[in-house]
Image 1 (cartoon, rainbow, N blue to C red):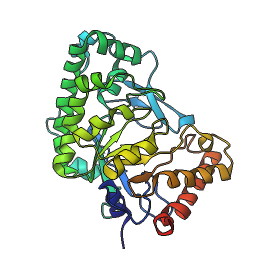
Image 2 (image 1 turned 60 degrees about the vertical axis):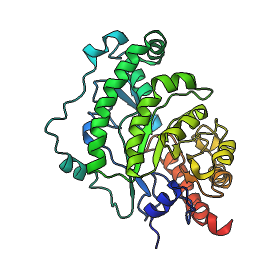
Image 3 (image 1 turned 180 degrees about the horizontal axis):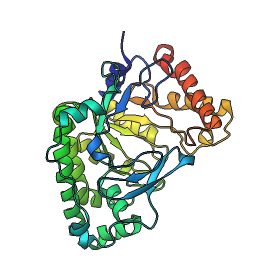
Length: 336
């Protein structure tokens, strides 16, 4: 019998799965198809309850209403002048790290026979720059001091590649993930030309690890970021999450087919995601999402619902999504 992991990886390879796989969230009684292996040395003191600091010293605060999502603490950015980054940004020392023991501990909660492991090294180079400086100062630095920004990215990249080689060898992930939230709901923060000059080389060097391993490479990028798809494909990306609806997703699916797997495609700001949404609104949104993007494969269902995790109303909406996915998504390829 096909496992959740095998069905998910079939989709990620562009093959036709037996059912629509679901990312991250398992149904009751089933293991998750995929889970993120969070490398301990990259986590700092951050968690989804109290916030904390990342490995570079940026302090984060969480929000209960968004289910523990975190942002840098307002007014506490650690870098105000990009020319002084060498005095502020210090990579952790990797000397003496017991990678084998750490990998074992970090993945002890995952049944690898049933669940695919995904590994990611960072939140992205643009995103990290903004975590250091804020969006206004980060974007200004990219325009006024591009050489210094690139030098900072080179420094971060050297550290992350050193970690990535160890993650490759000791975690042996089934999916290699890279990330960068570099767009608003309307447009990217910068042009494709600036992306190619300042950021793409570092995404490419990270993606190369997954390409050389022969595993699917997943790109996380929120907002209307479809301008970057040709560059992602160029560096070996095979899946994009959360593939939000402000992009021309139907056109993208028609153009690229299963060469670019779409993970998500959920209307995270639409009525089904609102607090107090009616049951049929939520259930119909699940069916509409699957109807639009599952035909032919190349689609992983991932519905983002926001709210306090302990809120009964939020829990009920999550239950409706799960029940409808189970009833509709898991039989879709047999009935359509």
